[in-house]
Image (cartoon, rainbow, N blue to C red; front, side):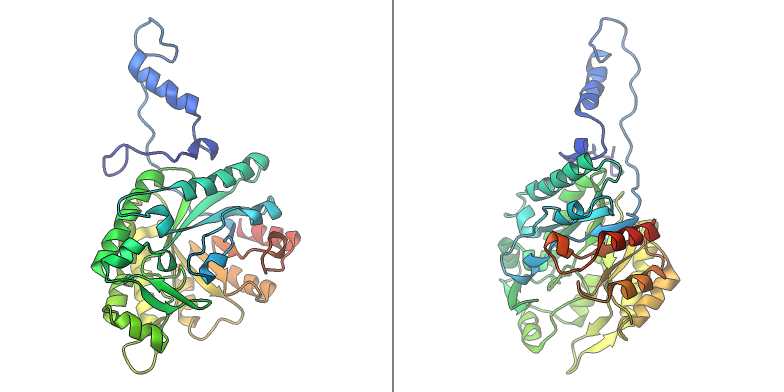
Amino acid sequence: MNIDGSEPMKSKMESQIGNVSQLSLLCGWMLLLLGGCGGGSGAATSTSAPPQAIVKQPIHGLVSMGSLGFNNQEGGLPDNGMEEINAHPGVYSGAVINVLWSQLEPQSGVFDDSAIESALSNIAAYNAQYPATPVVAKLRVNAGIGTPEWVEALTGGAITIAGNAGTIQIGAFWSSEYRTAWQALQAHLAADYDISSSIAEVAVTSCSSRTDEPFIASLDSASLAAMRQYGFDDSAYMSCLSSAADDYADWKNTPLDFTFNSYRNSDGTNLVENPDFTLQVMESFRTAMGTRAIIANHGLQNPISNAAAPIYAEFQSLGPPLEFQTISPTVDWPSAIQLGLTYHPSEIEIWQTTAAGGQADLSQMQLESWAADLK
């Protein structure tokens, strides 16, 4: 039974990823209805209590972040073929499942988990081939570029802002209508996957727009002008970020991975770094979620940028669980990873390598060494 009293729902792929077999589930129902698995005529035996939800532990090791090509084009879809983990078997502990909100809820209240299930099937296939080094999933739902058209309509229409390559369209993620719809999606996903062993972590992507990172926004003059027409300002954005983790209230057993960057005030003529606000959100997140609060940064490089310095100092203070991703696939990898390891992270996300069709030029030997350092 869930913490909220409802009956647990299981992922369609749990039977393939470390869960009880379908036969065991059938046997359990037969015990309840017939008094035994064989339906014998003997007296009914006592039945065991249903499985209880167990708080999951953060991933420890390297995590494949998947291909991000979909972020560079309007209408692009994530590729969850798991090429990276198959290119480097035995190295990874986790793999990111990238999905768009529009894939999961094409119409209001009409949910479709098939994109997640397909990715879980690919992970299950890998685990069947390499059972000694199984991989678990981190779910990362992209809002921003993945906002469904019906949500954009709720908030007055699509807003055109600068993306990673050209322009993209988003909804007013700071509005109450948007947030209510987003929370309903998270409630649905939590009902399906929170007590499931198939999803080990969930990324906090509330308030995101340009990328999946909540603190990264398009703050150029044209994007700001477009967003301000729909009520965007520092107060609205900061309110969204301050309560971002609350959107995941229905995820009661799954660690939450929240990526932090220095906040930039945008109400004035010039952008002004405001790391103190970021630190407040970080501390509140860790206080509220405890060891389920994975504090992350996706700008790892050596040396650390001036804007990120206060964030990394706070990492030292708060301690694990922490997660890093390098700022790009072409950084000085050995230097960046060695710096990251000094903060004792639980996991580091790796860009798609050249062996899997990506840009990160990394060898099996390098990956194995870093994976060992994290365990």
